[in-house]
Amino acid sequence: MQVLETAMQLEIDAEKHYRDLAAQTNDVGLVNILNRLADVEHKHQQVIAAMLDNKLDYDAGDDTFVSDVKLLCKKLEESRANVTVDTAQITLYEHARARELEAENLYNKAAAAETDPDTVALLKRLAAQETMHAQIIESIVDFLKSAEPGGWLEDAEWYHTDVY
Image 1: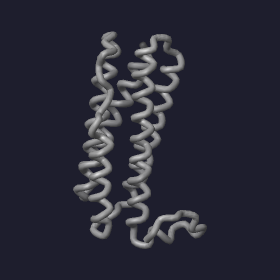
Image 2: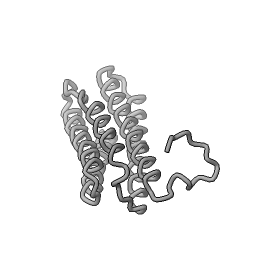
Image 3: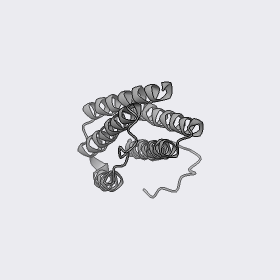
Image 4: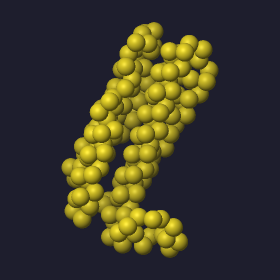
């Protein structure tokens, strides 16, 4: 199935991208979050490989992921004053977010074209996880932008509601 092969490549690329970002980041909290995202993308590769082998009993879930990332984000927020921001890295995070949304779209399209209910459920679960990853990356981008010296003044509209 072509869509699964494309999805596999997206997952491989995403895992590599997160590991590369983690290697370029000095903040331990960000490194932990990025490595956790890479681990989940690796799990998605295993799910897709199982699907390619017609083994739909493979579990796509990671029950500890959300709680782990929430804890890591809380620790990251506590260390905000110590975070040094390379603004070029923000572009890399934004690219990662776009890739997550691309994977989400791919899984949703594949689910819409599928007839087997178990396959549809698995594809939708993968799509939902990619949505969550995009939201996490968006939070990291917001965090990094506000951690920049003077970053909170960047938007003259001041439409955001963050408390500084």
